[in-house]
Length: 612
Ligand code: M6R
Image 1 (cartoon, rainbow, N blue to C red):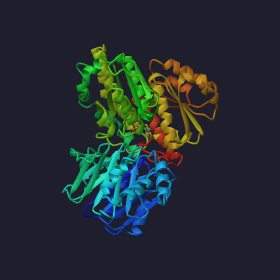
Image 2: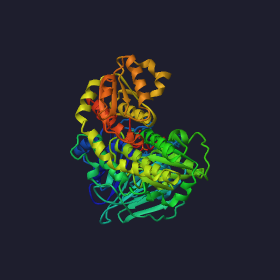
Image 3: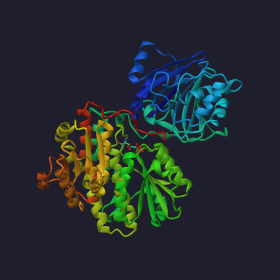
Image 4: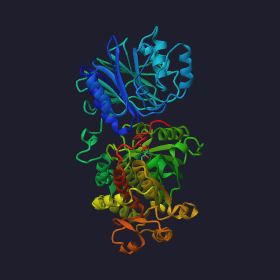
């Protein structure tokens, strides 16, 4: 999704800005641009397409200046084009604006400024901001003009702006779209960015801008203000990620690297959190809300995409082992469906890798308004969801760069196993069951390793089926959500049309699709629903659809039922999704390659969906 970088200091701004944009490339975008400022003019370059295009243009026509802002755009209003790319200028070309988010009342504002004689060049909602500032700045400082404009804007924004009137300043403002401020090591250069990743080559010291705050960056430092123009105090925090974590480290793709990191990811998610003697999970992030958790009568889990599917698996665990009724909702639905929640006896778990997904953040705020306890299961430390939830458990997956979620999903499911132990042991789960789950979590990383060693075999399978027009994934109980996740991964990165079904649902409609051209991937490891899935697979075979099965190691008996097999080690049923999803991730990855697509940056998608 859109990215922002801004720089003020003594280096060539364009170099710093392009490097920052490159670090945001993983988030997905369709055009990029940058602008620098001095007292005479704003120099601007913006192009549709990749940052490499922007960089080539800048190499041919260098952009001077030591103060500047830059942007990667993911189209919302108007298609990707040079003109719609950010930064946007006012009529005079003296103000430049980059913007993440959506201005919901832009149509009304656009009509108003056109009536006042402004000429708009783009179809974007962002450009109106540059012209509104131009209107206001006639007899005001930029800062005063900005405050007057911000109150007119409805919707969400992370903004960075420069102006020839005050050429040694960058102005920034936030409502709903994240921004961080970076302080150079010697405090002689300053940064603004939508994601700390953009500035990790330059500094570790950052301050998170809060909603409805404005920042002014100058050569002497950073000042922050609330919308009522009072100074605010900010805490300096450290960026938790390293440059190395943001690089491919010898792998051809980030997705491949992240799949291979999964053994370590599970180790990190459980590190220091298991008591093997008492069968307890020790979750420090929940210690302040233990009493509320003990009295819970119901839980709601919300998230989007893979995060919601991880929550669905969590709901099966929590119901089976912690005896808690759990309701799982897509965050985008939850916030509009007038949910009925009892603030005294209910809590909501908000699941998100990025911690910035607009719908999930919206759902969290809706729940907070209703007064229920909010708990985050989040990867990105310092993200909006991590900061706005009452309590939480970080999944510690490290930065996930590939658009398709792999290691974060596995870490989220692992954390749900910990939460199940934590809540379960408060409400009747025996010590021995707790110990059994803890012991099995401990050995999962080795089992994941064993699956990863089948990479070459899965690559061949992917090539065999890569040119099928469609694919179906089926599973039951814990693995119904894994079937959905497998299909999501497949369509997301390979563009092969794939659907996931709870296996029992086949007969209620989807079975009409089955014929020899439709491969069916069946999750049929040995668990409590194995026989049921086997019957479903028999039905699939009867329609002569090819079956690719994920089966338990050593389960040779299934060979006669299936066309192809991927083995996974045996584990507890509740933990089986953590293993079963891995061959499906690999299958999707190699299918994408076989079909000639880049798995890291699928078309039309963004890593973090910060607009509704
Ligand atoms: O950052 P989040 O976990 O909130 O993101 C939620 C979804 O957008 C995300 O899981 C998406 O479905 C993935 N790209 C799937 O691989």
